[in-house]
Image (cartoon, rainbow, N blue to C red; front, top):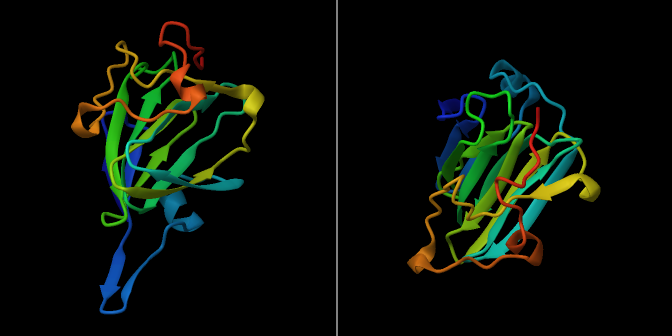
Length: 182
């Protein structure tokens, strides 16, 4: 496993060893021992799988109480995936980092607790999978507006079009009105 550091030290890009031959490929997407050696010694309690069409943006989501760390990957298509630091005590508070995840690059993105998360679908069809360290609690979920200028995420929007959003994501809070972690 190759670990690539990002501008936010706690957020990591992980590139597994991929064994390819004429039959296809094999990779190990999770191994507790290997990940513990990389500093990700976590218990995952929930796996999620979503499917989206092109130009869909999901996020920026987080759970204020019972926060979730996430290990995310794409098994079909390509997305631009983003983590925003919501930890007031962090030197990178308010900063974001983004990465291209695809079925061909096999990258995974480690997003620890204390971050908002979102992704934008670049390909025609996307299947997105992620492991979470805590369960989903809708009463604790919060959403920050994807296009908030104070965060300034440089989304690679196709043809400059606005993305397709859920009602929840379209009514996300501004950075100024959002709740943060201590």
